[in-house]
Amino acid sequence: MYHFIRYLHGYNYNIEEAANILKKNIEWRGSYKPYNIRVKDAELVAKNGYLYSHGNDKEGRPVIYLLVGRDKVENNDETKKLKVRFCLTIVLDIIFFNAHF
Image (cartoon, rainbow, N blue to C red; front, side, top):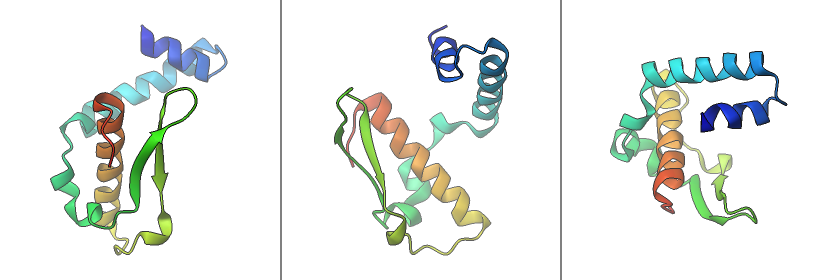
């Protein structure tokens, strides 16, 4: 219920649109399984140091920096997937464990 309320708020209380986006998100999570991602799975990308967290904003949300200029890994299909997996790993760790990288 909490997530649906967040989606409702994010989509200006348009119930149909919020429900549709939430459904797509649930389907994506079911197929991609972001909760199974580990940093070692994306070690090639992690070594670049172009994504990190540093502190929180005024509302207490983690601030995540993405320094695209530091990204020196070749962009092919495999490394693009690794980059997405790494970003998700960091974001999920920050959100759920308040970890800072």
